Image (cartoon, rainbow, N blue to C red; front, side, top):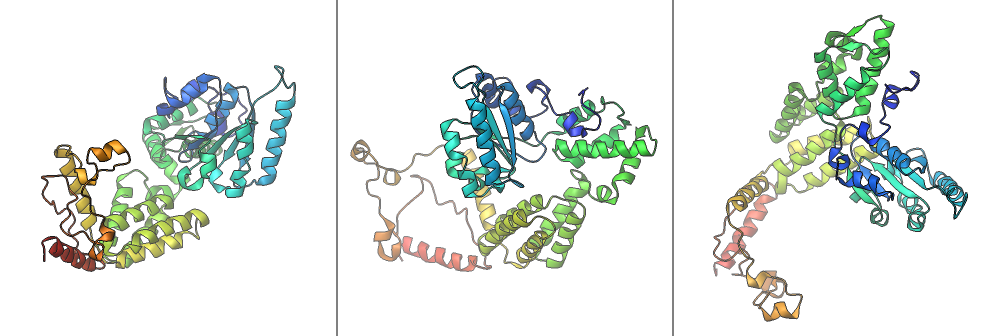
Amino acid sequence: MSGKSSTVPLAERLRPQSLGEVIGQQHLLGEGMALRLAFESGQPHSCILWGPPGTGKTTIARLMADAFDAQFITISAVLGGVKDIREAVEQAQIAQGQGAGTEGARRTLVFVDEVHRFNKSQQDAFLPHVESGLFTFIGATTENPSFEVNSALLSRAAVYVLQPLTEEDLRQIVARALMEPAQQAIESIAIDRLVAYADGDARRLLNTLETLTVAAGQEKIDHITDVWLLKVLGERMRRYDKGGEQFYDTISALHKSVRGSDPDAALYWLVRMLDGGADPRYLARRLVRMASEDIGLADPRALRLALDAAEVYERLGSPEGELALAECVVYLAVAAKSNAVYKAFNEAKAFVKKDGTRPVPMHLRNAPTKLMKQLDYGKGYRYAHDEAGGFAAGERYLPDGMAQPGFYRPVERGLEIRIAEKMRQLKKLNDGG
């Protein structure tokens, strides 16, 4: 039992109060793991917690503050700005100044939720204070920090990657929630549906369970069934069985419609998924994959457009950003198709897996030291830019004794028509023609 007032949201009541209560993320918090060692070290360090929603980023930050008896200051990058950063700095200075040089001085931990929403100058505002040790910085983000966090700030913070909670993790959370006062019993098939609907997000799971509990209380129902759950949550949950067979059938239909160059069908399945509650970010990732797998070098612009569509959605959200996904789907559907790179990559992986580790030919080796040059590293290498037409005809780049495997075979569609022509010209030069 949490002991917190029933007026506090269920997700907050069940928030872990110690590392031992945390469910999931054992690759970071298990015995001997990186984040557990950080807790046990007694010395907090700045870090970035990167992972999907509802995976414990805020919980871990709060537990850090408790573990180090630190003042905990939260800033939302969505709502906050430089003013909030200044106020955090002032509070940290006050905490550090109280009893300076005595046991009364306190550490401060500044937690920035959705740090990727801060622009460069806002992120830069933390740097001098992280450097001076005024406070420990912890950023939480759902986006890849390599792209969304300034390199200067990134270099001063360890990055910990949180994973979506597993089905077993979510079932443990449901079991813990069912111990709360006034929580109705729930049949196992309904739990299965809730777990699939949550899709690794504990907050979504608990908020949905709380919605059901309130509704059950209003209707004087003491047992939540799957049928009643569907009635309360509506048609959306029925049509969109996230994690179930229908979900994967629908994304398969979308992918195959794009591959089959049918823009109407592709749009239909895209809208079906959006209407059913599919995460547009998931759809954006799949569109990027389609551009790589089914279009490839027949139209290299497709991959860039797919990435742009994903970025537009991140900036605009729903519903405005969904139009960019629709534009991308139509382009992918009508673009020239080629899976030549996809096939070549798979063939190369299969070859390397079964082949031995061949040494790099001497003329292709790097020779940064005098000793390496004396050992003939790089000797005989022909610099292509100095050759006629920028091509060293007859030069070999594969390991000695390895036949030309011919992994990449461009198709006669789109840009790959010209690529195939270029490859034939180069082969003719290599053959002495």
